[in-house]
Length: 403
Ligand code: TRP
Ligand code: SF4
Image (cartoon, rainbow, N blue to C red):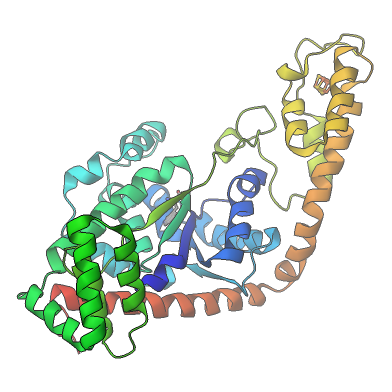
């Protein structure tokens, strides 16, 4: 069970092309994580439906393009597993099963529920699916028993809800009748020496709160070849006094809030219409930067400007080195350079950043089958994990009479 603690899971909703804000805010982080963890990344197409149930036509195109954007950015399908939520029906089953034990009040108090309803007030979001948005997210996470969930601050309450649900699930379904007796029997299966050691370490943790004892006992269990997985999970749970841990609690891996400014100086976001897409063609990038508004006080070429009032300079902060930034600052405040001059190195820097992405994307754009086969392989891998989790879940709930 502890293997899954090294597992990272994250998803993105399919509601349009990715832009440079996603690259700087999310994807660069994922690219780092795929080197260190066992990563699962998926397109949350069912989540898109919660807000876009009336315009499903954008979903299909977004799904494939998002995957191409990931690959273009440098997500490596050889190290990370890429898949599509709706291809793994276990998410839906777990969502349904968890819904039975989810108090309505837990969902109603998730901050995004009321906030998004107000923000998107042109849509009718008084639906069951929208209320269940964070529950579906919990099912996504728990289907893989993921240890880590990289998300931004706005998603932290969703991971918190997931933790509460896992705890509630384990509390209700993790105690078979006669749990203590079964645990004691399992200890005997460890053998005399290890059984004694387990008891000592358990006492060390339960009675003295000794963290080291807990870790030693967990390591001991990890190395036991002779006990069943069920007994192992039981003994993990018993160590901490509770029942069996069927669904482990995930932790948030907080991604720093993206500081990526858009073309108008506000945060880059599709809803503000101020984005440059990840694979935007170079002419369009140049045009967008050239038409950016600058410091409003710099009406004429001879008027000095103030970089801190200028959205172009915000982008220099991301893309330029100190030397270029100093050049821009001096040139701007002394009216030594024009805004067109100032924008030039910025256009170059963005194009340089995008060049390898365009190159990597090309083979996928030309050959969509390639993307589909990467996703098919990812779905297959993901499904194996999710299926096994659902077997555990059904068993714990007494629903394993299907076959
Ligand atoms: N709700 C997330 C977002 O809007 C997307 C998401 C869906 C997700 N399921 C997830 C993120 C599971 C992490 C884990 O960004
Ligand atoms: Fe902005 Fe550069 Fe023009 Fe100054 S010179 S107003 S920083 S674009």
